[in-house]
Image (tube, rainbow, N blue to C red; front, side, top):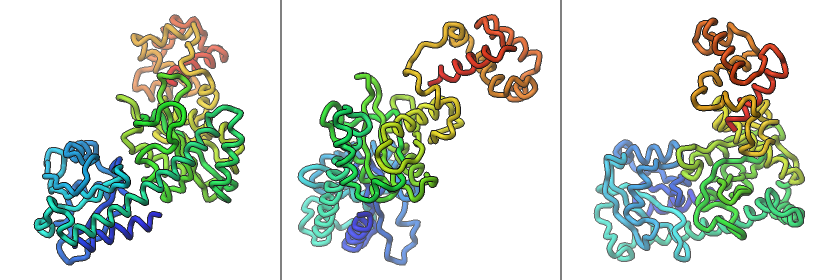
Length: 409
């Protein structure tokens, strides 16, 4: 499938005599055409195109500038002027990639001297532009077919992960049949949380594969299926699940690559919180996917709570969070520790956690915090006063340590 897109983009580049790039409707790069002339390549590039090719997506500012011209509703090619403030130093010609009235992506060309003579008002009057638009329509048909196939697999995956128990076996059987031999090989499960649901992705019967994401990943990172999984609470955030084919049961690189790419989506996050990703322990076959989903979600939560683990954390690397993540979300802190968790005592809480992370070694703790030992001892005494716990006792230390870690989940 990826080769088909590259071939079609090369057709457009050849028809118009200018390098073209293809992005999905979330502005994630799918393919780009090489420039065939001997001109200075720098003259054909600008920072937006370079970033799109190197980082595989455009920035939010660039996206906002282009969308302001109605590209998501366009029926025919558009000229878009430059905007240095958004980093767009050269104008663009946008060919909307449509299928049955729906935009599935965009073909972009730099609006330079080579294309200055194109009459976009009557696009099919110029045979070069007519050919390019015909090719763009073929791309739209491919993207639409890919989205439909991805949605079907996504619905099955979501039923396996979070559906009613009565339907899970049937969904797993259907998913196994659709995946063929890949269903029995090593598989990785990725969770990205929180994940912003798009239009038509709420409630029962929603499409499983999120709009604009499947086309960016399918066939590139071994992703077999994608689905958005709503939170159990009606107002809670959703998470994204990605089922990834692995080469071996110990090589999780494809799953990590998929997670990193998904985190670059504008849907990865909620408000000021950026999304984090978790990788479950690899599985063989589909039987243990519900347990793998719990692992992946736990790892994603741990990555959000402990920056040193993220933004992508593996289940095997999250240590005590494997136990803590099993606690109900938002569970109340132990009453003895609750006073320490007040915002006014944030410095004391951090001191206590670093002290316990350092196995109670005062010298290591003072060095990690950059404070004098006497200051450390004073703070630890205040922690004992607030909590009523004796930090010379193992059980007191364990309770405090786990409560402090759990509070950030």
